[in-house]
Length: 622
Image 1 (cartoon, rainbow, N blue to C red):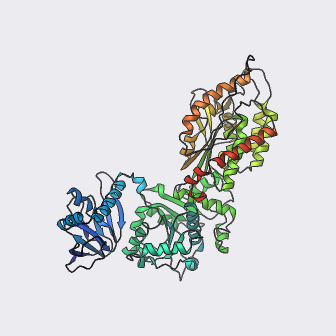
Image 2: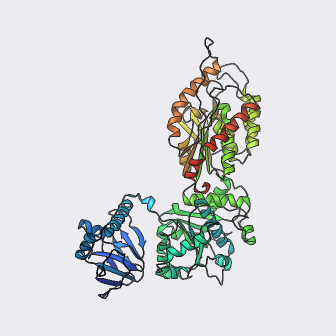
């Protein structure tokens, strides 16, 4: 550490000329402030990058990097206590120091200084009380395989663009691949300085703002280059973490297989993604090393696959890659060879990129489709309108008719196909039988369901789907996610008393609406970040006295009253509730086309009604 008494520090206007009596110089690795000791005074970082480390007893250290202009020692100045963190120089640093006496005098004569330090204190306190998960950096490491392969780098560009579109925020892609050997992204670089030059440049925020202003009509994606030997360069690693202070998300495209040391920034990464191609496992092994100790951060991307990858296909790929989570990117090679932008990529690839981008930014969408018999046509209107607005559903769970519509949607059926299937169901729905198990026979509906399912299993769905039913032996909730799909869907929609229970693996199951009419909890369990509930429960019309209700109306009313109570509990767990305004009556028979179109339109209108709320939850709708 070197100390200079002649001070020429760019200070805030409210500081007197002799406020900072000393400027100290620290070399990388030297400690500026030690946790548990009283700082020498009030400090201000003039240049360089410093790392703040807080060690909690029994817990992992929490690290953050700070740049020029940051204050140190302000908490101790006010409280007289010891430092709550250790601050060490990550790069060569210059630190201005004011003694406690000088700082106290300045506070008395300059209220503006007190206001700024109070703001800093408030920020520090809010960070202390944040849960560990919210402190995670928004950094993503992408190991892109051999630097000569274009697929991984072009994927990094497409994914970063999708993240910028989805967040409407600033995303920075750092290209660590040498432009001379891998020129894939060279023509897309933003004209900003390289990463090593940005490390100690105090003008970084202004440069990024100017770039945003110049590209205000485009997505806020900036691409910059970095030295290939960045792992050995502390300034480059610190530059990554400094960039995080000025962007919403940062993606680092790193060449795999170079046998370079693990970067310190890997500890801050929210996700580590390996782009694998064929039998190339180099990127995956490097990514495993970067994510060691926290395997939940590891993802693999493969450019091969079906246009609508099924859950079974994805599971097979995951097994082949050692059980890691996998995202399939269909037609990625085609898009790379043509240098397609995100606007011209094939639709299957666009869907897959959007799904991964939503997962990385924590904005996956799950929908819980509620029970409601014939009112299930409204679900079709809801799903198709969300799709038209650009809200892709990543997870689906359904009870009763919600399971029917959700299952068909997860298999890729179009809205019109689902409508035709539901309307055709009326021909099979009303078949009276001897009332030993139920008033109506279930054979016709079972045949219709089997034909609609076409032998499909849950693993054949392109969207993760779960059907909810009630176990008639225990009264507990049963969530089906494996095996043939049609039988659990039939069980989930078997209204007690009207239709017979369904036997699966020796147990009997009935309508899921009895225990969970709007399964929001199931959607959350599947992995959704934003849960949308679609309840179909309506108030019953007054009885037409003196006529007594018939058997079917009595059963329907009993179920409706029970589900109204359960609905309130289920819906309260959703971030957004789409509640179609229905006719208020209890429809106990299928009335064909007019009923279908009315309810479908009600579903469409319900989505339009909550569009402001959806825009709050999903940034890309803004």
